Image 1 (cartoon, helix red, strand yellow):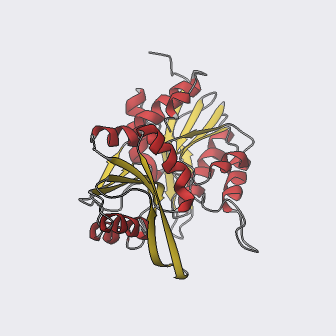
Image 2: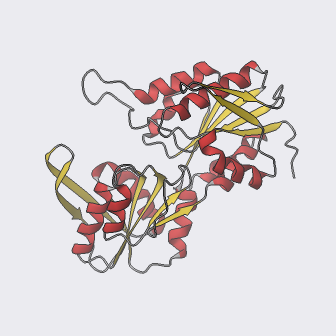
Length: 312
C-alpha cells in the first residue's frame, strides 16, 4: 500500500455519493468541507481542514443545474487560495460537452467556455470520462485524463454470454463508438439511421446490418430524453432482433426519458453512476465507476500509467 498522506479528496454536494465510493475504494476518508447557502440562492464553499501542500482531488460532475459547475469552480478557487500544491478536478460527467463547435451562426461554444473557466479558477489537471466529443481534450492546455465507461460496461455485457451478439449505433454519429465495441466483441455491427420531417420529430428509423435473430446491444455515450434510442430499439425488435439492450455511460435522462424507456422494446439499459438517478426503474441497471476513478487517482499521484483504463 502506497503512502497517500499528501492526497485529499473532496466532493461537491451533488457528487458526494460517488466521492464516498471512491474514497472507500482508495482507502481514504472524504475531506470535510461546507457549503453555506444564502436565502437568495447565492452560496459559498469552504474547506474545514487544511489543504496546504496537498494534492487536492475535487469530485464533481457538472450536470444541470449550473450551480454544480459554479460550486466546482469555487472549490478549485478555495483550494488554490488555501495553498494546495495541486488541484485536480475529477468530473465523471462533463456537462456542456455537446456544445463543442459552432454548428450554426451566432452560437456559443459552451464546452470551450467551461474549459476556460476551469483553467482560470486554477485547476492543474482534469480527470473525466466519455466526453461527448473527444476533441474537447484539446480545449485545455493542462493534462486531461480521459477515461472510458466501457471499462465497466463491456465486462457486464460479456458476463451475459449473449449468443448471436450484435452491436448497434442509434445514429450515424455514434458509428465510430459502436464499431469499437463490435471489434472488441468480434460481433456484427448495425447502424441505425433516422430521418426527420420537422425538427425534434423522427419520421422514420432504418437499420443497416443483419438484425434477424440477434441479441442487440445499442451503445451510446449518454441518453437524454431516450427518444432516439427507444425508437431504434423498437425498430430493431420489429426487424426480428431476439433482444435489445442499451448501454450508455451517462444517465442524463431528462423529460419523458423514464417513460420512454419503460414503454420501449428495451430489455434493460445499463449506465454508470456518473450522474445520480432521479428515480429507480426496473429496466435501468447502474454499474459503478468509483473503483476505476480510485485507481486512476492513485496512479496519477504516483506518476504511474493509466492506459489500462482505455478498454475500447
